[in-house]
Image (cartoon, rainbow, N blue to C red; front, side):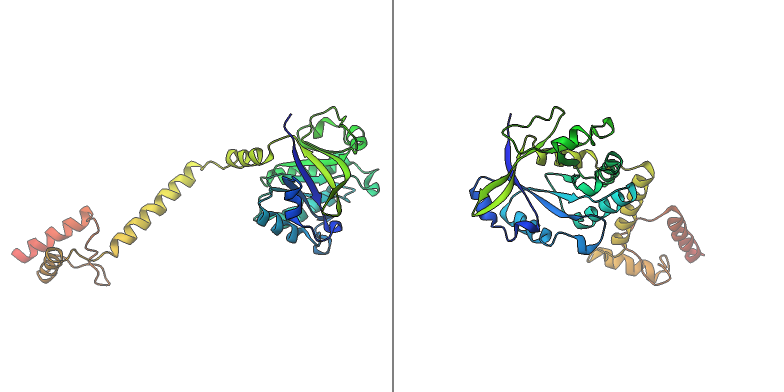
Length: 279
């Protein structure tokens, strides 16, 4: 089984040397967005900095939000929190719901997790749940959550979770550049999965949308055509003669739209002008 080495980061890791991460073989990072409901003071103080560093270092990244939700309304606010910070960004290692805090141990974490993940999925993100092995085997062991990927926290020599999972957090003591990090192994090609999801979810245009698009393009073409001048020489001379003879009168603003196509009614008007001139 192919595995990719990564670390997860938050403000608690302080100022992180991303060059040192790369030198240590780290191939992806998972960045904390923040915690709890959608309040700016609950954003992770180093999320933006870590995101910018990951982009500059060419390290694909994912994101996670630490949950304090005890009901689905709070979980929706946590989803809004994540979506606000993710706006305009592409987390190639998905967006994860961190479900572990003792304060939510008696809550309906299946419903809160489903609310968060559904909201992120509807917004177009690849999403999953982070939790300890004991929570995944207990509080979060529900068929309602089987559709979502799992990031398993089990600091051990092997991951013993028996259901499908994509990432294993195997230690909290991975030493890099004099700092300790949470070490992770990813077992899926997340960048490929995320990009394939984005391509698949590209919305198809409805018939009404296609018609509106075609109409706009046609209108733009004729608008541009109306602004073109007459062909030098023969075109200019012919138009000047036709106007002088009263055969072409043009628009109310005096424009003849020399390169535009003539409608049947415009041709009929030109013939009527010719007939009047002959009388």
